[in-house]
Structure formats: structure tokens, C-alpha cells
Length: 223
Image (cartoon, rainbow, N blue to C red):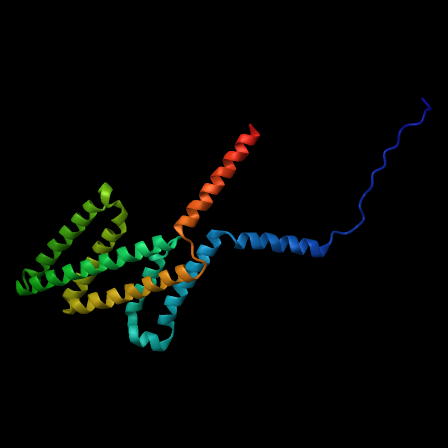
């Protein structure tokens, strides 16, 4: 023992953090966030909606399509899905459901018009009841669950077309206007999903499997 206590030196860094490296770190974090599929999906959905909305914002296309373009905007919002296949499937269900509902509505309206003014609202009301009931029963059957959205579209389209056709006296025009508006919204949604950073269900399945295997490997190494 020499009577001296051991001294401990504490060095305090005096250098200021490098601003350039911090900026690069922040930019890399932002880039990682923007590479996330969820963000890309949101940007694509917004792009499809704004493209359809331009048809209503500019005068030239608005004079061609009129107020029916609102159905294209609604279709673009509803139809757009995470993968290309899901978007195509949803758009097909919407188009087919609207077409079937329109054909049925035209037939019922013509039958109601032949039956006279007294029986017209009764026939139309009963037809709405039966169509809504049958479509609701079919969409909950296990082997028809994948077409559940299509049956909902049939209910909505049938009610709107038959009521507007009954009041306006031209159900065929109502069906055609609604159908081409839906076709415009669906086509734009599919094109955006296909040509702008497309996301395929097969790629998503592959990525999920890779993540599962990595998680399994990490858990085995931890044990």
C-alpha cells in the first residue's frame, strides 16, 4: 500500500455530432418507411381516385360523362385492393353484379308498367323485397362467400336502378350510365394496380413464407 488511491480518468467527448451523418441516417429511415408496402398501397389508392376525379374536375370529360362519373369515383375507392388479383376480382364482381341487377330491374319495371299505375308500386316494392332477401341469403352460404361483395352490389344496384327507372321512365338509360361509370372506375383501378409497383399475391405469399422461416430460425437459435 503506497497510500495513494487509484485515480479514474473520465474522458468526455468534445466533438460535435456530425450533421452530415445524422442527415444521412434520417434519410435512410425515411427511405425505409417509404419502401413499406402499406405506404405504397396507400399512394396507389390515392392515385387511382385522383385520376378518376379528374374526369369530373375538368370540363371536357365532365360534359361527356356528367354526374354519373360519381359512380366511377365510388368504384375506384371500393374496388382498389392490396394485390392485383384481388382488385380484378372485386371489380369483376361489381361489374357483373351491376349488370345482372340492371337486367332484372329493367324486366321488372316493364312488367310493372304493363300492370297499370295502381299495381306499379306494389310490384316494384315486392321485387325489391325478394331481391334483397334472396341476395342476403345467398351471400352467407359457405360456397358463395367469395362472391359476397357481388351480392351486395346486386342489392344496391337493383334498388337504385329500379327506383330511378320508375321515376324517370327510362331504366335502360339508368343501367347503361351506371354500368359504364363502374367500368371506368374499375379499369382505372386495375391499370394503376398493374402498372404502378404491382403487388402480386404470389410475391406476398413468398415474402410471408420467408418471414416465417426467419422467425423460426431465430426462435431455434434462441433455444
